[in-house]
Every structure is written in structure tokens, then in C-alpha cells.
Image: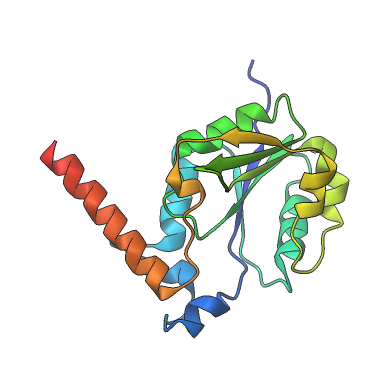
Length: 185
């Protein structure tokens, strides 16, 4: 029998103010990217991982409130992988690497090319601290308090989020060049 898997918390509550300020129309998560919304790309990666998930899309004042609400909705989970909805290039394997590392560590922080990324993993021992989160702070103090395990991943998607219209255009170019290299090989 397999150990219970942690639940992926897909955060889709943000207002995306930097995106609209940069000229983007509407929600960045609903912006089209290669024929699908940004959020659908992220969701597809989570679905492909086979891990349980919860989509937190209700409006909240800040990231901390979103995380707390998602943990509250999934309190029986063995742990959580906090994944912002604007990481459409995240790979299912990265989700599995973080989930597996949570078996041995309270907090797992993936990084790619020296840059901190997502999803940040939290074991069940962090439940109460996560439930207490409020505001825009997020969970940085929980990461610090538990001496997060730094997990180096080979996935640029772990650090490639969309904050502006330029980010969306750059991501579309990345996906197109990836598609072309698959076709030509």
C-alpha cells in the first residue's frame, strides 16, 4: 500500500494587478496560451501527476488567506504542495519529486538554476501554522522556521510564472519553440 500523497493546492485567487497594469486584459489565469488558458496548462500538469488536488479560486485578501483557506478545505491531507495557478510550464515530475521529498522533510523548497520555485511542499506537521496564515505574507516564515530542504529540480517551469503581458508572450514563444523541436526530432 502506498503512503498517502500530499494534496496539490492550486492557488487561483489573485487579482493579477501587475498583469492588467502591463496591458493584459482580464485575469492572467484566463489569458490564452497556445489554445488553452494559463490556468488550464497548470491544471493539466497537476492532473497528469495523478496527485490529489484542490483548486482555490475564491477571492481572498492575500496569498496567506488563500493558502489557509485551501488547507482548511483539505485538512485531512498528509501534506500540501502550494502551486500558484500562473506556472503553466510546471512538469508533473517536479510535483512528484516535491511530494516524495515531503516523506523525509517538513518543508521542501524546489529551485531551478539557483532560483527558488514552486510548488513549495509542506508536511502535515505544518498544518496549524498554514491554517493561521493571513494577508500577503504567504508562508515564508514557515519555510524559515522549518529549515526547508532545498530540492534542485531540472524544470524551468518551477520558476517561470506569468506576472505581465510580456511574460505571457515570452511563455508563448517558449512553448512554440518546444513544439517545433518536438516536430523536427
